[in-house]
Amino acid sequence: MARTETRGADTPEKLETAKIVADAVEAFLGAGVPAIERACNERRLLILEYLRSRPAGATLPEWGLRNVTVETAIEEASPEFQLTECPVPLLVQLADVRYPENPEVPMACGRDKAGCHIFVFFPVCREWLQRAPLLLELTTWHEMLHACGDCENDGIVRHNKIGVDSVVQLLTGKSLTIDGPPCL
Image (cartoon, rainbow, N blue to C red; front, side):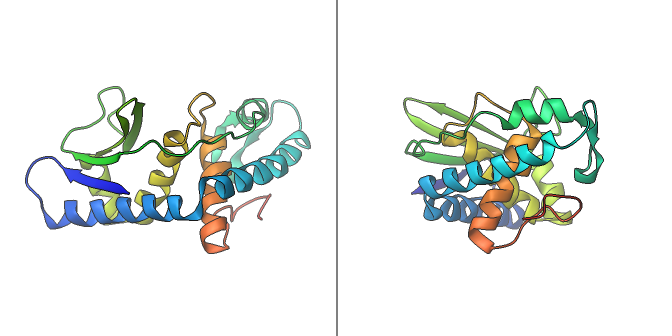
């Protein structure tokens, strides 16, 4: 279903990156969007329960989020996930540039009537490929949540602590939330 395209000359690193991203897209789509939506909403409720038990104004250092308050996290987590099927064609495109608005962004997703694009900014992803290739897979799943329509309610808690962790748990039976509750 996904088609992977690279800009510029293909290198072994780019081909490896393209394979990791394409495999992650296929795993996401293979799990089924309704199952992912259900898993995200189940986890969302558990996360909200945990967050509401925390004192007002507290941050979330147990999740590595020292600058995110409980109130911000609750705001991100409150709306239900309402995913739609990913538009086709889905084009995964590697680019030899950095994202203009934030040069540390590894990927971005765009949807239009012609389909969906996941742009992989290779200068950042090259570093990740060398240090921690799993980050490419996790970031792809984050972008797939956007590709399936969860664009209006953005945030690190919503898409990473809830969305990506739900996908990981659905596909592997394991949770990424190791330090601090809720460890599901």
